[in-house]
View 1 (cartoon, one colour):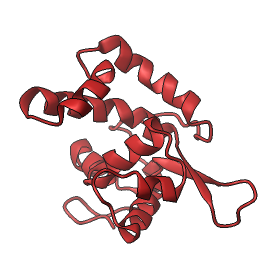
View 2 (spheres, one colour):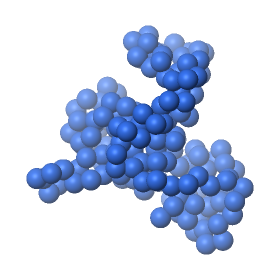
View 3 (cartoon, rainbow, N blue to C red):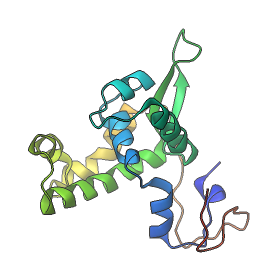
Length: 168
């Protein structure tokens, strides 16, 4: 199911992007899954540097899956163990996160260690930013291949809240 059929196309693209992908944990979990290759729930929980609780992680992973940014596959030999991967929408979103990180590094004072670790992919490193999606495609083989939609395109079968109402 494409994102367009889940979410209202009658909202501003900035509002829709915020609703779909912006909370404290979305960028952190996308970074950990996509770039740091933390594939299991345990890896995401144990190695999280900002202390997410297990309950929050469960709900955030479900949310990321619901908005088509990640997927999971069962781990070999384990009924309940899942391996998480970015899918096409998540991969395509990563340069946006790096643009925000570049802005933050320029105008605020984040950890110098993280800034240096991310520097090759920050916006001033334009060739590296353009190379990021193909690299992420290789690192996340379980992705779905989707075609982007124009934000002006209307989906007549769209199910969503009218403009100004909350999308749950």
